[in-house]
Amino acid sequence: ALVEHCVAAAAASPSGAHQQPWHFAVCRSQQVKGQLRGIVEREEAENYARRMGRAWVQDVSGLVGELHSGEEVAKPYLSEAPAVI
Image 1 (cartoon, helix red, strand yellow):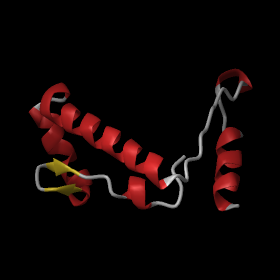
Image 2: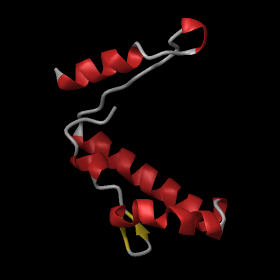
Image 3: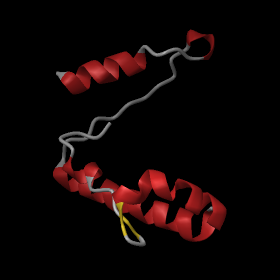
Image 4: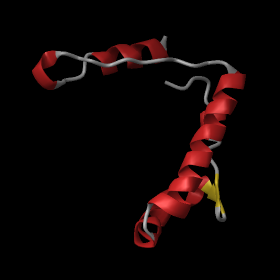
């Protein structure tokens, strides 16, 4: 019920012209959450390696340092959470 309440609250959040054009998906499948985690980790590694400048990567290192294992991007919460929205 908590996840459904969160989605309902998010769906009612303000938007331009009160159109609320939001779309949400709730995933509880361990297999799909694992696939999602792999995709997100690869994209973030690509961002850090090629898309973002070194200064940006250094600036955010204090914010994400605990989420990464050395130079490796790790997003364990994406597969460990009971649901991903």
